[in-house]
Length: 102
Image (tube, rainbow, N blue to C red):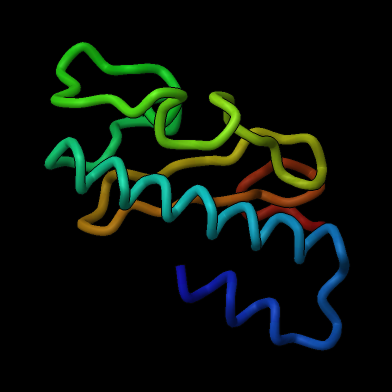
C-alpha cells in the first residue's frame, strides 16, 4: 500500500493515475481486512465481494464498499497477483496490458 501513496507525491501524476493509485490503496486495505477475518488472503479479488464457501465470517456487503469491484480510471478491471507472500493489486494502465504503455 506504500506504492500508491508514494506515487501520489509525484508532481507530474495525471488525475487518472492518481484516482487509480487511490483505488489500489482501497483494494489493498480490503485484501488485508479479508486476511484478518479469514486467516488467508483472497485467492482472487472477487472474494472481496462474493462470499467464498470457506468464509469463517462475512460482513454485510462484503469487504469492499458497495458490494462490487471498481475498475481503474481507464475502465479496466484491476489485476491481482496472489502468487507471492504479499499479494498485489495492479492496474495495467490505459492499454490494459502488462508491460504496455499508457
